Image 1 (cartoon, helix red, strand yellow):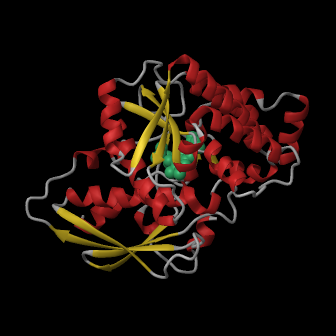
Image 2 (cartoon, protein in one colour):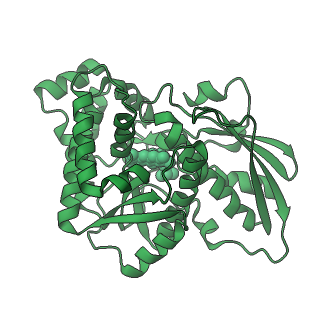
Image 3 (cartoon, rainbow, N blue to C red):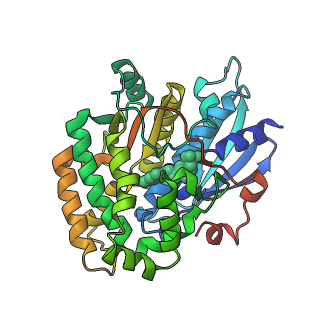
Length: 367
Ligand SMILES: Cc1cc2nc3c(=O)[nH]c(=O)nc-3n(C[C@H](O)[C@H](O)[C@H](O)COP(=O)(O)O)c2cc1C
């Protein structure tokens, strides 16, 4: 494997919302390539202004930098193409040049790239140690800080918030096609989606969910007459929220707004997550409360269902009470972490040949 192939092979293990892998690679020389990234804001209600996709792109760029060190190289990464227009650019491109660097040694986090994965099941309730918190806080760098929510009282408050949040997620018609498309049923591993065994439900829950996900009418029927949101909310939100070491928020020192800001946040997140992996700490993103908060801030109702907008506003009020207005304004990422075993079921990645840039297909593939 050439150094360039090694770097790309590792880079593709970056996390992305619903494992969509919103990037394609174009080799332009033996030591240079372009990353063509896109977002799914047109089809995915959660991809608010492409921010989650930009965070994922940041994680990918961080992987590139780390993986290059394993080849004794430095990755020179620069944005190319049109300048960003008012935070609205859907396609983003980066050129990467690999430069040999005397005395360069493999970064210890590079070895964690493929081991890092989401754990959506219950984790140890032991608090994250002071020493580990410090290492995680250092991992995000000077431009970000980490806000922690730990102890039973705070975890209960977050659990309440996620319970409320899950009702929005599960009763919003616009989220249904996203959920339906993302789950790879009957699988332990999936190269381009999330295997059902990794979403954190037991067998009964999965069977019911699979039946209901056949159509929105079935989901609606379950929600209305059979308390259909209760089982997934208990298993996917309440239990994980209580059974973990802490919840966390990655907060930028300066209010994030541009694509570059969210890419920088993605780089910080990836260092945080890889450091957690190194320390034997598991992580699950909890991004939807933050995303719904962005919708409310922008005054953009993303649903035709009348109950969704007031529910999102209520959720935002609760978030402000919990984390404070200033933190929330600058928040880039939210999740839970805890000591525990890595997930036995996980998302895999598309092979490199399927991630080659082809101008005409890149958007439809990700949509
Ligand atoms: C920006 C972003 C947001 C995400 N949001 C969530 C989330 O809200 N809940 C969740 O369980 N996973 C979330 N994920 C995790 C992805 O689903 C996961 O990274 C992807 O399926 C690949 O799986 P892996 O990270 O285990 O390799 C998010 C990932 C990213 C990068």
